[in-house]
Image 1 (spheres, protein in one colour):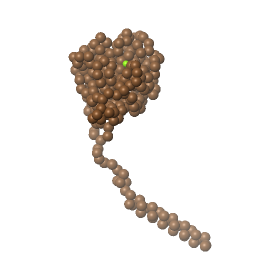
Image 2 (cartoon, rainbow, N blue to C red; image 1 turned 120 degrees about the horizontal axis):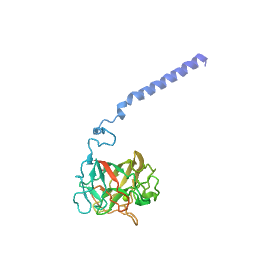
Image 3 (cartoon, helix red, strand yellow; image 1 turned 60 degrees about the vertical axis):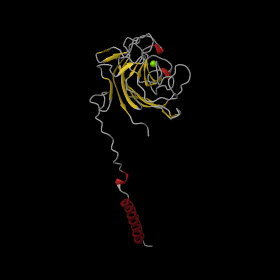
Image 4 (spheres, rainbow, N blue to C red; image 1 turned 90 degrees about the vertical axis):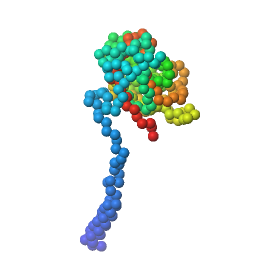
Length: 263
Ligand code: MG
């Protein structure tokens, strides 16, 4: 074959291949892979960092504790509120929300007193029970304690799922500084017979840093022994008044967004 003929044959093959490819392209359309519905609901982002988005249930905005009751006897919570901040009253004990929740996104801010004393678990201990399943400390605790230069067992330091999951990193700020928790709580699901269908999971950011990545819970928090599940429905969110002797911690800016159950 002459050189010219080879070039013509190659060119013909190339054009043919391009045409075949174009035909296939003509059959597949970009719209084929576009998803238009359902449209995600529109939510106005917060005006200031850590402020509540438009669909949040505000649990504490600095004014009063109307959304909270004493865990002990369901009387008004009674923790002191001043200057937009609520401070734990250890004598009154734990407080919990009037409302009950299933799955949710939670934001809260907490501050260890600048002049905190004590060590280990006895230094600014509190906690948020992501679902309160009964009196006292019954529930699933995301730990609050001073973990800035204060060693303790790692599955009991700040941002641990207490006695179950240490935080991925220690993102603690110093005492006296405000700290944030942003939590995605997926409540456990129980069958009609009470059997566990799916365990609770927690994703949490501490001061904007991922500390719990879809951690799977083995059951309710227990101080001694192994965690276990007991069937329950939607539950209050509870704040801990821990009995250690250090000065009480404070909270501000608490809000929650209810989430649809897992598919
Ligand atoms: Mg605690």
